[in-house]
Length: 239
Image (cartoon, rainbow, N blue to C red):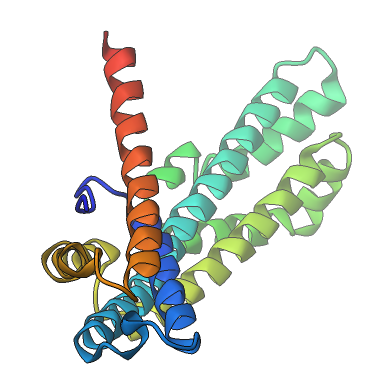
């Protein structure tokens, strides 16, 4: 039986371990079969199940961090769009719109596009200040006179709110997080390759183990095939 390729992705390993645990539980619930009664195999699978749960939790935590980056990117894009729109209006040969855009740009330029490159906390503070400045009576009238600007200010408010929510989620995840998905992956691959695969290879030909071992082998082969396919695709792209 082939071992799990170490280049397997954490999500693929998570899915593989879930299936292996399920296969063992199915074998344990079936009548007869040595695999269902094997205490040593049960100990190995208990460790696989524990690590599978841990890698699932770690992946979820990693995704929360990724969501925070995505939320930051979304608000950065709105800031750039707002700057471009105001500068576009300021270049129009229409006196009323040009004047309104100029007044709004004077407010916006106190912050500028560069706020998108500040730290998360500093950018949040500056965005809140910018939105508050734009809510002033004079700015509100100018915003109303420029089509699309009000929508962009509303989009910035919504993007900042989403970032705040993502930040709260990230903080909660950080409090409960004890390890990364990558670190759990190493432990899980080790248990599969150093304990489960050698054990199943030794007993696969015995009565009561054949079906379970064959199913496990098929699932590992499927995960390894995905790794090989990526490697071939990458090799083809480089060539």
